[in-house]
Length: 264
Ligand code: 48F
Image (cartoon, rainbow, N blue to C red; front, top):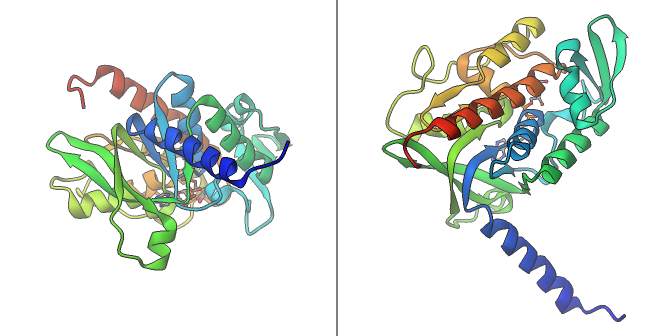
């Protein structure tokens, strides 16, 4: 069969159009395709929720690919191994309580399971703002990362979501924009972004989970963004907290969606 470039082009445009039209009204929108965001996407999609992930970079997986200082192995503590196992990432016991996984296998498998579960990832798309209403955050404002990189003055597009998850890592970008531009205060001790603290692996892993919660009506934080928002320390290349945080935020958002009285 002769291949026709016009068919190839139309196939891509039609399919992308179908994909993006299918996510204009979401149950949950996840910002950031790092480990926390991908696990959250997988869990919410598996639970039957309409969910999508938006990732600024071309590649998904966030800070996982390079392990620690480009040694592409990650460490996961025993309590979190079940998350990797559930998604099909192989782990190896290193010594009591400590397991390792190949960083490339982990990042690629989490991404694959998230998309296959029904949570599409829109890569090379940056979230630059939120959609606000008196009841809280109800959507995201999106633009191509390339537009931003080129410094072009191009208006964005927007989607609606009943819940938004900030899984943008150290920068907590969605929380920052909400703090700056949406009237109201964050549900943090000071009402503002507390800011990430220096490294303390054990405390950081514990706090990542504790800090995974709703920080503004309709906005939840997960992964490193949770610690940046609530003032927890960084943990380095141990990823259990990220995985468990992704799972926890999915549970919180699921309950929020099931119990939220106002149709948002
Ligand atoms: O940084 P990242 O991997 O976040 P995480 O899931 O995991 C943190 C760990 O990787 C590591 C660590 C602990 O082991 O400290 O850093 O919390 O993934 C965040 C993703 O969000 C994307 C960013 O490119 C990255 O892939 N991102 C950030 N801001 C935006 C965004 C934005 N405004 N719009 C879209 N994507």
